Amino acid sequence: MDFRVFLTLFIFFFFLFSFPHFSHSAVFPRQANLKITEEESYIRLKTRGGLGSGFDPTRVTQLSWHPRAFLHQNLLSDEECDHLIDLAKDKLEVSMVADNESGKSIKSKVRTSSGMFLSKNQDEVVKSIEARIAAWTFLPPENGEAMQILHYENGQKYEPHYDYFHDKANQELGGHRIATVLMYLSNVEKGGETVFPDSEAKEIQPKDDTWSDCAKKGYAVKPRKGDALLFFSLHPNATTDPNSLHGSCPVIEGEKWSATKWIHVRNFDKPVRTAKGACADENENCPQWAAAGECQKNPLYMVGSKDASGYCRKSCNVC
Image 1 (cartoon, rainbow, N blue to C red):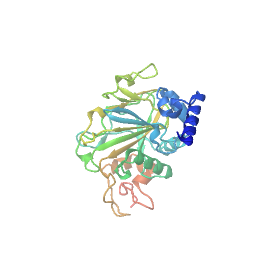
Image 2 (cartoon, helix red, strand yellow; image 1 turned 60 degrees about the horizontal axis):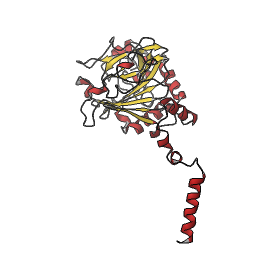
Image 3 (cartoon, rainbow, N blue to C red; image 1 turned 135 degrees about the horizontal axis):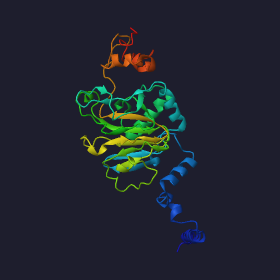
Image 4 (cartoon, helix red, strand yellow; image 1 turned 120 degrees about the vertical axis):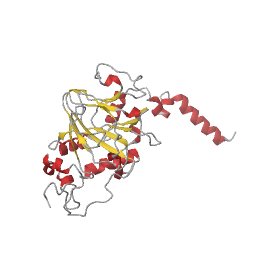
């Protein structure tokens, strides 16, 4: 045997058998950590200080295939969560739902939260988050709606529903909603879980007394500040997925803040905008929104800025 080959083998086996800590778990640390609990995994991640810095596939966990659902730990930093809440807290209105027949926004007892819409790329923080979502979902930013900030107080909820549309009117611009990214902006002491009543995984998820009765009726995700839930409302073949039925359980203790990003199968941005400065409304709900004070509460969308015209200039009496 060549002396160099002999020396190499000798050194290899010397280190292999002389150091007991050099084991399979040292070579394959990801496999060795498979048995750690969810809480231990979260603590280790937080201890490493790698939170809220952007999309990181190593923080993504697959929750279910029917529906397709994934959880990203700390997609947002604490500072980003607080910033989104600050942008919204003085502009909240009673949340609406889309009527199945007409497609118009109406009030309903099934949804008792309050909320408001930010503008796309409203500031650098919002722009960064939207880019992060596009990187995670592989869906272009122009397919997304403006981000909606929601606030749930004690007892408030959103009963199980679908994010895809049942009416034709809402499918004209952008088509169906293919995916939803739900970002949790606060922790909730009890309740407020996102529940999937028809998920294939509901029977195998362990539940204890820390879960609400609502959450025990399906596969559920606890709201944790900075985490983001991605789920798809359509199958890969673009047909609607009835297993994507989901709801927001009532808040039992504390309050819940969240941000929702709905993403469509096609470009959701208006293909043709009214010429800048034109006196016109571009949404049939503009008069109703103006009467509710949205011209002052949400001026970027309603009135516009120096860079772009708003969508409700006529109803806001600025032209």
